Image (cartoon, rainbow, N blue to C red; front, top):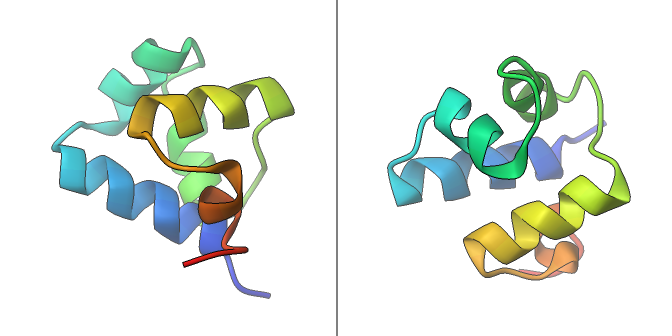
Length: 68
């Protein structure tokens, strides 16, 4: 199974030049959760998905891999 969410999250984070710990602080999650999301080990709650989309200025559909 593809992990489009994790790939998109990593790509957006790297494009913005922000580390996993800094992003975790920005959206108020534990420091290791970003890594877990990027690796596909778990998925964010809806509220965190909304926070990520707002932070990066993209749609939830884009983050989920439903649109290019």
